[in-house]
Image (tube, rainbow, N blue to C red; front, side, top):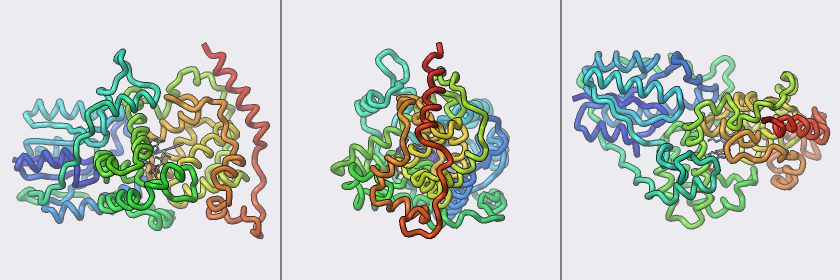
Length: 450
Ligand code: FAD
């Protein structure tokens, strides 16, 4: 017997239900990763995610080879490549962990049906969410649209299952299966190589993720509730890119954290991740369409390319916004509080459509996540599920006073804003009061929408 394990957003060996099931079958196991840049609906990865994926695959490949079965890399659509691999290797089973995006589900469902028609065992497993999206419903059977009752309903469910142990060894196929060379995928930037800041900031991979979790729980959990909104405090877990690529599972985090005192707030943030994915499951167009359709009436002015570029490059003249955008460009991450501030500024001071911001984050964040990114952009826009009301416009100057009172975060990322700097800071590109009034006037159209 030979089982193909098709790995996707689950680049780990421990707590990997599909891999575990394949090993437990007692068969030879061929782990495979496909780079699918052709299937309709598959969103191409952003630049920062491509960089991360390269490192993560290199790490996973080495670990799988050590355990006995090297990772096979192939390029193309699963609908073609998986059946080809089945024929090539004589595999009698294919297993994978579920994905929840619309296009991905269509691909997986069709593949499962066609494999089964050919007499191949095809099995999907639950791995990346604590609760399957179709299991959490309101009393009247509809999906939740508000977080608090959603999370209450989740917490009333039986506890998420315990993490599965990593296999100690994996029997590979008798004959070597041909694999692409990872470098030939050109996932890493070369000309120019802009990934220096990412390399300085991150170590992708399963081992690094597990170490991060323990370091966070031991050193920072106690300060999390009070410090999580202070960008310079560095007390959040920084697990988001590891979770995005499935180098760690929410089950592993849950069971490691649940018995520690003071973990409720942190675990409820994992709850927001669940909520974003459940919303996406029920509304697959979350990255392109307003979840609340009355926002379709919002009169976005023609795109101001210069203003968008100033925002992207951290040249708006507002220190908190510029610091956040430069942190993002340099490290591939941005503190959550600052994400809210820069998103509000783009939409409600520059009057630029949230989809432009979502796209920029998609390209530059190492944790760019199909659900969480779109969900949170719509949350700040006011158009999303359980969203902040539109008229809540974050004032970047007041936010800086409140959350960066000593200016530690700002001067780290934009030293020219330090009081003793010789470089004059940029002039503000927009007046906060006037632009806010214009945004609220534009929002009147949404309020009047039928
Ligand atoms: P912690 O505070 O340690 O939280 C633990 C985990 O909970 C995170 O790793 C993450 O998986 C989850 N989480 C925390 N907050 C949220 C949230 N608001 N929504 C969903 N999950 C959450 N998060 C992403 O993972 N990917 C994105 O693409 C993304 N885009 C965002 C865009 C905007 C405009 C905003 C306002 C937020 C976005 N977030 C996104 C949510 C949040 O900013 C990050 O999850 C968080 O900053 C990651 O840092 P951390 O791992 O230290 O978080």
